[in-house]
Length: 278
Image: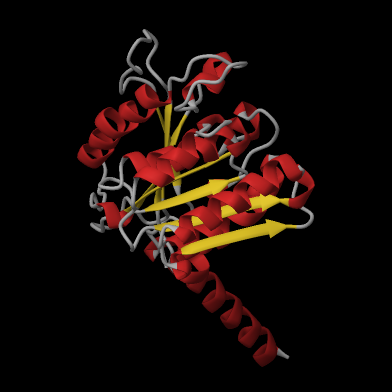
């Protein structure tokens, strides 16, 4: 009986020591870090600096690695329910999981939208009903101010092959504009639920610009978003293919259950981002 008791105590001691040893020697964080930047600068014509949200992957602080970067619009909706309009994408949780499961690591830079001015900032073409477009100034801010700041203060892979842009709805529309306007900066675009109903502008842009052949485009739409959303996206994808862009560098998905909301975009993010950086 004494032998059994001693054996039990010895086993408990070994288990306790093992757990303590693991805790002491493990220095790599299992979760990424979110940093809020409020002083990078303002979009031309505006006085208030734009909030930027930067996600760095697990282990960033403990390594010397450089990382690819994804620039995303509507930063308020990406990481936190408390700042989102209708629920968050859960970008940090998804990327933490991908890092753990497949060692997929990425820096994400979320640019907050301009609130009431969002409809103007995320469009690069004017609209007879909704007014002026300020998307050119908005994207210039990202390319000329935000990206240089991020590349200077974070360990990034600065080249176009490691730089992507992504957004949904009007954010999808401005991501389309970005990849065609700045093919020397971005080589990948996630174009979720793009608002191609806006007008002829993006179709004319495709007609006048040939993307580098290695550029990857990930299109997503929910069938429940309606024909006014689905049909223009299908037309756009076909137009890009007709222009000679390689079909294996275009992903076009229509989810029969998809609706126009963050829950849908969140559910598709992991698949799309891994394909873009394949």
